[in-house]
Image (tube, rainbow, N blue to C red; front, side, top):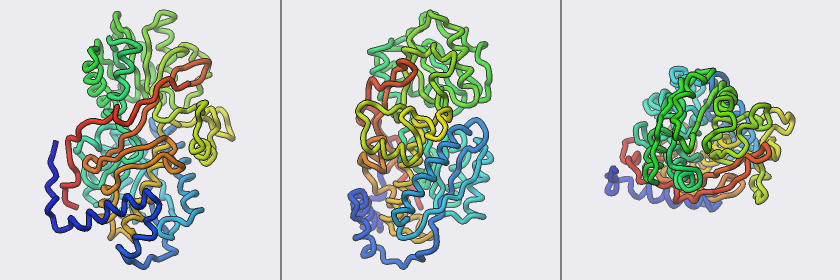
Length: 434
Protein backbone atom coordinates (compact mmCIF):
# COMPACT_ATOMS: atom_id res chain seq x y z
CA UNK A 1 0.00 0.00 0.00
CA UNK A 2 1.27 3.47 -0.85
CA UNK A 3 2.02 5.83 2.00
CA UNK A 4 0.85 9.43 2.11
CA UNK A 5 3.58 11.90 1.20
CA UNK A 6 1.73 15.20 1.52
CA UNK A 7 1.48 15.48 5.29
CA UNK A 8 4.05 18.26 5.42
CA UNK A 9 3.00 20.04 2.23
CA UNK A 10 2.22 23.78 2.32
CA UNK A 11 -1.48 23.22 1.73
CA UNK A 12 -1.98 20.96 4.76
CA UNK A 13 -4.02 23.64 6.47
CA UNK A 14 -6.31 23.99 3.51
CA UNK A 15 -6.80 20.21 3.38
CA UNK A 16 -7.76 20.20 7.06
CA UNK A 17 -10.21 23.00 6.40
CA UNK A 18 -11.73 21.05 3.53
CA UNK A 19 -12.04 17.91 5.66
CA UNK A 20 -13.82 19.93 8.35
CA UNK A 21 -16.07 21.50 5.77
CA UNK A 22 -16.76 18.17 4.09
CA UNK A 23 -17.94 16.77 7.41
CA UNK A 24 -20.00 19.90 7.99
CA UNK A 25 -21.69 19.47 4.62
CA UNK A 26 -22.71 15.97 5.65
CA UNK A 27 -24.27 17.46 8.76
CA UNK A 28 -26.09 20.06 6.68
CA UNK A 29 -24.24 23.15 7.93
CA UNK A 30 -21.87 23.85 5.04
CA UNK A 31 -23.95 26.77 3.83
CA UNK A 32 -23.26 28.69 7.03
CA UNK A 33 -19.54 27.96 6.97
CA UNK A 34 -18.41 28.19 3.37
CA UNK A 35 -19.02 31.91 2.71
CA UNK A 36 -16.59 32.75 5.49
CA UNK A 37 -13.93 30.23 4.52
CA UNK A 38 -14.25 30.60 0.75
CA UNK A 39 -15.67 34.07 -0.03
CA UNK A 40 -16.96 34.25 -3.58
CA UNK A 41 -19.63 36.10 -5.54
CA UNK A 42 -21.48 33.53 -7.65
CA UNK A 43 -23.23 34.41 -10.87
CA UNK A 44 -26.66 33.38 -9.67
CA UNK A 45 -28.13 32.76 -13.11
CA UNK A 46 -25.25 30.72 -14.56
CA UNK A 47 -26.01 27.00 -14.30
CA UNK A 48 -23.72 24.32 -12.94
CA UNK A 49 -23.14 22.23 -16.06
CA UNK A 50 -22.68 18.52 -15.42
CA UNK A 51 -21.60 16.36 -18.31
CA UNK A 52 -23.78 13.24 -18.14
CA UNK A 53 -22.04 10.43 -20.03
CA UNK A 54 -24.68 7.73 -20.50
CA UNK A 55 -24.95 4.59 -22.59
CA UNK A 56 -27.95 5.52 -24.72
CA UNK A 57 -26.93 2.93 -27.29
CA UNK A 58 -24.76 -0.19 -27.39
CA UNK A 59 -24.78 -3.11 -24.98
CA UNK A 60 -25.35 -0.80 -22.01
CA UNK A 61 -28.47 0.89 -23.39
CA UNK A 62 -30.92 -0.53 -20.82
CA UNK A 63 -28.71 0.81 -18.04
CA UNK A 64 -28.19 4.12 -19.79
CA UNK A 65 -31.92 4.70 -20.15
CA UNK A 66 -32.50 4.33 -16.42
CA UNK A 67 -29.28 6.10 -15.44
CA UNK A 68 -30.50 9.12 -17.38
CA UNK A 69 -33.97 9.03 -15.85
CA UNK A 70 -32.52 8.75 -12.36
CA UNK A 71 -30.04 11.58 -12.93
CA UNK A 72 -32.79 13.85 -14.26
CA UNK A 73 -34.95 13.08 -11.21
CA UNK A 74 -32.09 13.92 -8.83
CA UNK A 75 -31.30 17.12 -10.74
CA UNK A 76 -34.94 18.17 -10.58
CA UNK A 77 -35.04 17.71 -6.82
CA UNK A 78 -31.81 19.66 -6.39
CA UNK A 79 -33.13 22.49 -8.55
CA UNK A 80 -36.50 22.52 -6.79
CA UNK A 81 -34.59 23.07 -3.56
CA UNK A 82 -32.40 25.92 -4.79
CA UNK A 83 -29.71 24.27 -6.91
CA UNK A 84 -26.03 24.19 -5.99
CA UNK A 85 -24.59 27.33 -4.42
CA UNK A 86 -27.75 29.11 -5.54
CA UNK A 87 -27.27 28.06 -9.17
CA UNK A 88 -29.41 25.63 -11.18
CA UNK A 89 -28.04 22.27 -12.29
CA UNK A 90 -28.02 21.53 -16.00
CA UNK A 91 -27.30 18.00 -17.22
CA UNK A 92 -25.53 17.94 -20.58
CA UNK A 93 -26.18 14.43 -21.88
CA UNK A 94 -23.94 12.66 -24.40
CA UNK A 95 -24.19 9.08 -25.62
CA UNK A 96 -20.92 7.13 -25.60
CA UNK A 97 -22.43 4.12 -27.37
CA UNK A 98 -20.97 1.91 -24.60
CA UNK A 99 -17.71 2.25 -26.52
CA UNK A 100 -14.31 3.12 -24.96
CA UNK A 101 -13.03 5.17 -27.91
CA UNK A 102 -16.26 7.11 -28.17
CA UNK A 103 -16.18 7.60 -24.41
CA UNK A 104 -12.88 9.46 -24.65
CA UNK A 105 -14.36 11.58 -27.43
CA UNK A 106 -17.35 12.43 -25.23
CA UNK A 107 -15.03 13.58 -22.44
CA UNK A 108 -13.18 15.78 -24.94
CA UNK A 109 -16.50 17.20 -26.12
CA UNK A 110 -17.59 17.94 -22.57
CA UNK A 111 -14.47 20.01 -22.00
CA UNK A 112 -13.96 21.68 -25.38
CA UNK A 113 -17.50 22.22 -26.60
CA UNK A 114 -19.85 22.12 -23.63
CA UNK A 115 -17.49 23.62 -21.03
CA UNK A 116 -18.97 21.46 -18.26
CA UNK A 117 -17.90 21.79 -14.65
CA UNK A 118 -17.63 18.03 -14.00
CA UNK A 119 -18.54 14.83 -15.82
CA UNK A 120 -20.37 11.86 -14.34
CA UNK A 121 -22.45 8.77 -14.90
CA UNK A 122 -20.37 6.23 -16.84
CA UNK A 123 -21.13 2.58 -16.03
CA UNK A 124 -19.35 -0.01 -18.19
CA UNK A 125 -15.81 -0.56 -16.99
CA UNK A 126 -14.15 -0.72 -20.40
CA UNK A 127 -15.70 2.69 -21.19
CA UNK A 128 -14.44 4.11 -17.89
CA UNK A 129 -10.96 2.81 -18.67
CA UNK A 130 -11.12 4.36 -22.13
CA UNK A 131 -12.43 7.72 -20.92
CA UNK A 132 -10.70 8.37 -17.60
CA UNK A 133 -7.18 9.06 -18.95
CA UNK A 134 -8.49 11.91 -21.11
CA UNK A 135 -10.42 13.35 -18.14
CA UNK A 136 -7.18 13.37 -16.15
CA UNK A 137 -5.29 15.10 -18.95
CA UNK A 138 -8.00 17.75 -19.15
CA UNK A 139 -8.17 18.04 -15.34
CA UNK A 140 -11.91 17.45 -15.60
CA UNK A 141 -13.40 15.77 -12.50
CA UNK A 142 -14.85 12.47 -13.70
CA UNK A 143 -17.22 10.84 -11.21
CA UNK A 144 -18.28 7.40 -12.38
CA UNK A 145 -21.17 5.14 -11.41
CA UNK A 146 -19.50 1.91 -12.40
CA UNK A 147 -18.54 -1.12 -10.32
CA UNK A 148 -15.15 -2.24 -11.56
CA UNK A 149 -12.03 -2.12 -9.43
CA UNK A 150 -10.45 0.27 -11.95
CA UNK A 151 -10.84 3.37 -9.75
CA UNK A 152 -9.83 1.75 -6.46
CA UNK A 153 -6.85 0.03 -8.10
CA UNK A 154 -5.04 3.37 -8.34
CA UNK A 155 -4.43 2.87 -12.06
CA UNK A 156 -6.43 5.89 -13.18
CA UNK A 157 -5.83 9.46 -11.95
CA UNK A 158 -6.67 11.92 -9.22
CA UNK A 159 -9.61 13.41 -11.11
CA UNK A 160 -11.57 10.12 -11.18
CA UNK A 161 -13.91 9.12 -8.32
CA UNK A 162 -16.44 6.39 -7.55
CA UNK A 163 -18.12 7.64 -4.36
CA UNK A 164 -21.73 6.52 -4.82
CA UNK A 165 -21.53 2.80 -5.63
CA UNK A 166 -19.33 -0.04 -4.40
CA UNK A 167 -16.81 -1.92 -6.52
CA UNK A 168 -16.73 -5.58 -7.54
CA UNK A 169 -13.85 -6.45 -5.25
CA UNK A 170 -15.76 -5.22 -2.22
CA UNK A 171 -18.98 -6.87 -3.37
CA UNK A 172 -17.56 -10.35 -3.89
CA UNK A 173 -15.42 -10.54 -0.76
CA UNK A 174 -18.41 -9.54 1.36
CA UNK A 175 -20.59 -12.30 -0.10
CA UNK A 176 -18.14 -15.18 -0.54
CA UNK A 177 -18.50 -16.34 3.11
CA UNK A 178 -22.29 -16.61 2.72
CA UNK A 179 -21.99 -18.44 -0.62
CA UNK A 180 -19.47 -20.92 0.81
CA UNK A 181 -21.52 -21.56 3.96
CA UNK A 182 -24.93 -21.83 2.31
CA UNK A 183 -24.49 -22.96 -1.30
CA UNK A 184 -21.17 -24.77 -1.74
CA UNK A 185 -17.44 -24.41 -2.25
CA UNK A 186 -16.83 -25.93 -5.72
CA UNK A 187 -17.58 -23.15 -8.18
CA UNK A 188 -17.78 -22.67 -11.94
CA UNK A 189 -17.75 -19.01 -13.01
CA UNK A 190 -19.33 -17.55 -16.16
CA UNK A 191 -18.44 -13.91 -16.77
CA UNK A 192 -18.03 -11.31 -19.57
CA UNK A 193 -14.59 -11.16 -21.15
CA UNK A 194 -13.60 -7.59 -20.32
CA UNK A 195 -12.47 -5.61 -17.27
CA UNK A 196 -15.69 -5.92 -15.24
CA UNK A 197 -15.81 -9.67 -15.73
CA UNK A 198 -12.10 -10.01 -15.04
CA UNK A 199 -12.61 -8.31 -11.67
CA UNK A 200 -15.18 -10.97 -10.81
CA UNK A 201 -12.84 -13.70 -12.01
CA UNK A 202 -9.89 -12.46 -10.01
CA UNK A 203 -11.48 -11.33 -6.77
CA UNK A 204 -14.16 -13.97 -6.35
CA UNK A 205 -11.58 -16.67 -7.04
CA UNK A 206 -9.46 -15.25 -4.23
CA UNK A 207 -12.45 -14.76 -1.92
CA UNK A 208 -13.84 -18.29 -2.29
CA UNK A 209 -10.35 -19.75 -1.83
CA UNK A 210 -10.13 -17.87 1.46
CA UNK A 211 -13.28 -19.75 2.50
CA UNK A 212 -11.74 -23.12 1.68
CA UNK A 213 -13.37 -23.33 -1.73
CA UNK A 214 -12.08 -23.48 -5.29
CA UNK A 215 -13.04 -22.38 -8.77
CA UNK A 216 -13.21 -25.43 -11.01
CA UNK A 217 -13.74 -23.65 -14.33
CA UNK A 218 -13.54 -20.10 -15.64
CA UNK A 219 -15.78 -19.45 -18.66
CA UNK A 220 -15.21 -16.05 -20.27
CA UNK A 221 -17.94 -14.90 -22.67
CA UNK A 222 -17.37 -12.29 -25.44
CA UNK A 223 -19.43 -9.18 -24.55
CA UNK A 224 -21.38 -9.25 -27.83
CA UNK A 225 -22.31 -12.95 -27.64
CA UNK A 226 -25.98 -13.64 -28.39
CA UNK A 227 -26.07 -17.42 -27.85
CA UNK A 228 -24.31 -19.36 -25.13
CA UNK A 229 -24.97 -23.05 -25.79
CA UNK A 230 -21.44 -23.70 -27.04
CA UNK A 231 -20.00 -22.48 -23.71
CA UNK A 232 -22.26 -24.36 -21.29
CA UNK A 233 -20.75 -27.87 -21.75
CA UNK A 234 -17.62 -26.49 -20.09
CA UNK A 235 -19.40 -26.30 -16.74
CA UNK A 236 -17.57 -28.80 -14.53
CA UNK A 237 -19.58 -31.91 -13.62
CA UNK A 238 -18.84 -31.64 -9.89
CA UNK A 239 -19.84 -27.97 -9.72
CA UNK A 240 -21.72 -27.17 -6.51
CA UNK A 241 -22.29 -23.50 -7.30
CA UNK A 242 -22.64 -21.90 -10.72
CA UNK A 243 -21.63 -18.24 -10.42
CA UNK A 244 -22.85 -16.09 -13.31
CA UNK A 245 -22.63 -12.43 -14.17
CA UNK A 246 -23.63 -11.42 -17.67
CA UNK A 247 -24.54 -8.09 -19.23
CA UNK A 248 -25.82 -6.83 -22.56
CA UNK A 249 -28.62 -7.70 -24.99
CA UNK A 250 -28.09 -11.47 -24.69
CA UNK A 251 -28.79 -11.83 -20.98
CA UNK A 252 -32.31 -13.18 -21.34
CA UNK A 253 -31.10 -15.73 -23.88
CA UNK A 254 -28.29 -16.69 -21.51
CA UNK A 255 -30.67 -17.50 -18.65
CA UNK A 256 -33.09 -19.39 -20.91
CA UNK A 257 -30.30 -21.49 -22.43
CA UNK A 258 -28.90 -22.17 -18.99
CA UNK A 259 -32.28 -23.61 -18.00
CA UNK A 260 -32.44 -25.73 -21.13
CA UNK A 261 -28.93 -27.03 -20.48
CA UNK A 262 -29.59 -28.17 -16.90
CA UNK A 263 -33.26 -29.03 -16.93
CA UNK A 264 -34.34 -30.11 -13.45
CA UNK A 265 -30.82 -31.24 -12.49
CA UNK A 266 -28.85 -28.15 -11.62
CA UNK A 267 -26.29 -27.06 -9.06
CA UNK A 268 -26.97 -24.17 -6.73
CA UNK A 269 -26.89 -20.96 -8.73
CA UNK A 270 -25.63 -17.60 -7.54
CA UNK A 271 -25.81 -14.73 -9.99
CA UNK A 272 -25.26 -11.03 -10.11
CA UNK A 273 -28.48 -9.22 -10.95
CA UNK A 274 -26.57 -7.71 -13.90
CA UNK A 275 -27.66 -10.90 -15.67
CA UNK A 276 -31.29 -9.84 -15.31
CA UNK A 277 -31.31 -6.09 -14.85
CA UNK A 278 -34.24 -4.54 -16.76
CA UNK A 279 -35.76 -8.03 -17.23
CA UNK A 280 -39.13 -9.03 -15.75
CA UNK A 281 -38.63 -12.13 -13.57
CA UNK A 282 -42.08 -13.33 -14.62
CA UNK A 283 -40.96 -13.60 -18.25
CA UNK A 284 -41.84 -17.05 -19.63
CA UNK A 285 -38.99 -19.60 -19.41
CA UNK A 286 -37.45 -17.88 -16.39
CA UNK A 287 -39.21 -20.30 -14.04
CA UNK A 288 -35.86 -22.08 -14.04
CA UNK A 289 -34.56 -19.34 -11.73
CA UNK A 290 -36.97 -20.20 -8.93
CA UNK A 291 -34.92 -20.90 -5.82
CA UNK A 292 -31.70 -19.39 -7.16
CA UNK A 293 -29.85 -16.46 -5.62
CA UNK A 294 -28.70 -13.05 -6.78
CA UNK A 295 -26.50 -10.24 -5.59
CA UNK A 296 -28.33 -6.92 -5.59
CA UNK A 297 -26.71 -3.57 -4.95
CA UNK A 298 -30.16 -2.27 -4.05
CA UNK A 299 -33.17 -4.64 -3.85
CA UNK A 300 -35.44 -4.26 -6.88
CA UNK A 301 -38.61 -5.27 -5.02
CA UNK A 302 -39.81 -3.23 -2.05
CA UNK A 303 -39.12 -5.36 1.03
CA UNK A 304 -41.33 -5.78 4.12
CA UNK A 305 -38.97 -3.50 6.08
CA UNK A 306 -38.95 -0.82 3.37
CA UNK A 307 -37.61 2.51 4.62
CA UNK A 308 -39.24 5.89 4.14
CA UNK A 309 -36.16 6.85 2.11
CA UNK A 310 -36.77 4.02 -0.36
CA UNK A 311 -40.41 5.05 -0.71
CA UNK A 312 -39.38 8.64 -1.42
CA UNK A 313 -36.71 7.57 -3.92
CA UNK A 314 -39.01 5.17 -5.80
CA UNK A 315 -41.61 7.89 -6.19
CA UNK A 316 -39.01 10.41 -7.37
CA UNK A 317 -37.65 8.08 -10.08
CA UNK A 318 -41.16 6.82 -10.96
CA UNK A 319 -40.57 3.18 -10.05
CA UNK A 320 -43.19 0.95 -8.42
CA UNK A 321 -42.79 -1.64 -5.66
CA UNK A 322 -41.86 -4.29 -8.24
CA UNK A 323 -39.02 -2.21 -9.66
CA UNK A 324 -40.80 -1.27 -12.89
CA UNK A 325 -41.84 2.06 -14.36
CA UNK A 326 -44.99 3.41 -12.75
CA UNK A 327 -46.29 4.28 -16.21
CA UNK A 328 -45.39 0.95 -17.82
CA UNK A 329 -45.05 -2.24 -15.72
CA UNK A 330 -43.23 -3.93 -18.60
CA UNK A 331 -40.45 -1.32 -18.42
CA UNK A 332 -38.30 -2.85 -15.68
CA UNK A 333 -35.63 -0.65 -14.11
CA UNK A 334 -31.95 -1.27 -13.45
CA UNK A 335 -32.69 -0.70 -9.77
CA UNK A 336 -29.62 -2.47 -8.38
CA UNK A 337 -27.32 0.05 -10.06
CA UNK A 338 -29.12 3.27 -10.97
CA UNK A 339 -29.34 4.47 -7.34
CA UNK A 340 -25.64 5.30 -7.81
CA UNK A 341 -26.60 8.13 -10.17
CA UNK A 342 -28.98 9.57 -7.60
CA UNK A 343 -26.53 9.34 -4.71
CA UNK A 344 -23.52 10.51 -6.74
CA UNK A 345 -25.25 13.68 -7.90
CA UNK A 346 -25.95 14.60 -4.27
CA UNK A 347 -22.30 13.90 -3.45
CA UNK A 348 -21.23 16.24 -6.24
CA UNK A 349 -23.55 18.87 -4.79
CA UNK A 350 -22.07 18.35 -1.32
CA UNK A 351 -18.50 18.73 -2.59
CA UNK A 352 -19.33 21.83 -4.62
CA UNK A 353 -20.94 23.47 -1.63
CA UNK A 354 -18.08 22.44 0.66
CA UNK A 355 -15.53 24.02 -1.69
CA UNK A 356 -17.76 26.98 -2.62
CA UNK A 357 -17.28 25.95 -6.21
CA UNK A 358 -17.59 28.86 -8.62
CA UNK A 359 -16.40 27.48 -11.95
CA UNK A 360 -13.78 25.40 -13.79
CA UNK A 361 -10.97 27.34 -12.11
CA UNK A 362 -12.08 25.71 -8.83
CA UNK A 363 -11.85 22.11 -10.01
CA UNK A 364 -8.81 21.39 -7.83
CA UNK A 365 -10.72 22.71 -4.81
CA UNK A 366 -13.61 20.45 -5.76
CA UNK A 367 -11.30 17.42 -5.93
CA UNK A 368 -9.91 18.20 -2.49
CA UNK A 369 -13.43 18.61 -1.12
CA UNK A 370 -14.35 15.19 -2.50
CA UNK A 371 -11.27 13.74 -0.81
CA UNK A 372 -12.29 15.37 2.47
CA UNK A 373 -15.45 13.26 2.69
CA UNK A 374 -15.48 10.30 5.04
CA UNK A 375 -19.01 8.91 5.10
CA UNK A 376 -22.54 9.32 3.75
CA UNK A 377 -25.41 8.55 6.09
CA UNK A 378 -28.51 6.66 4.98
CA UNK A 379 -31.30 9.06 4.16
CA UNK A 380 -33.21 10.66 1.34
CA UNK A 381 -30.02 11.48 -0.58
CA UNK A 382 -28.54 8.04 0.12
CA UNK A 383 -31.51 5.64 0.18
CA UNK A 384 -29.45 2.51 -0.54
CA UNK A 385 -27.75 2.79 2.84
CA UNK A 386 -24.81 4.21 4.75
CA UNK A 387 -21.41 4.31 3.05
CA UNK A 388 -17.88 5.12 4.09
CA UNK A 389 -15.43 6.74 1.68
CA UNK A 390 -11.71 6.08 1.41
CA UNK A 391 -10.08 9.19 -0.08
CA UNK A 392 -6.87 7.32 -0.88
CA UNK A 393 -8.57 5.16 -3.49
CA UNK A 394 -11.54 7.47 -4.28
CA UNK A 395 -13.91 4.57 -3.54
CA UNK A 396 -16.87 4.05 -1.22
CA UNK A 397 -17.80 0.93 0.75
CA UNK A 398 -21.39 -0.01 1.58
CA UNK A 399 -23.90 -2.78 2.16
CA UNK A 400 -24.75 -5.60 -0.28
CA UNK A 401 -27.90 -7.72 -0.48
CA UNK A 402 -28.31 -11.39 -1.37
CA UNK A 403 -31.80 -12.17 -2.63
CA UNK A 404 -33.63 -15.39 -3.46
CA UNK A 405 -36.05 -15.84 -6.33
CA UNK A 406 -39.37 -16.87 -4.78
CA UNK A 407 -42.69 -16.81 -6.64
CA UNK A 408 -41.23 -14.67 -9.39
CA UNK A 409 -39.79 -11.95 -7.18
CA UNK A 410 -36.57 -11.29 -5.29
CA UNK A 411 -36.67 -11.50 -1.51
CA UNK A 412 -33.63 -10.41 0.51
CA UNK A 413 -32.19 -13.23 2.62
CA UNK A 414 -28.92 -11.63 3.71
CA UNK A 415 -27.46 -8.13 3.98
CA UNK A 416 -23.74 -7.69 4.47
CA UNK A 417 -22.12 -5.18 6.79
CA UNK A 418 -19.86 -2.44 5.48
CA UNK A 419 -16.88 -4.06 7.17
CA UNK A 420 -17.56 -7.33 5.32
CA UNK A 421 -16.48 -5.62 2.12
CA UNK A 422 -13.52 -3.58 3.31
CA UNK A 423 -10.05 -4.31 1.95
CA UNK A 424 -6.66 -2.70 2.37
CA UNK A 425 -6.04 0.21 0.03
CA UNK A 426 -3.35 -0.46 -2.55
CA UNK A 427 -2.93 3.13 -3.76
CA UNK A 428 -3.19 6.75 -2.68
CA UNK A 429 -4.52 9.21 -5.22
CA UNK A 430 -4.14 12.09 -2.75
CA UNK A 431 -0.36 12.01 -3.25
CA UNK A 432 -0.75 12.73 -6.97
CA UNK A 433 -0.34 16.33 -8.16
CA UNK A 434 -3.39 18.36 -9.11
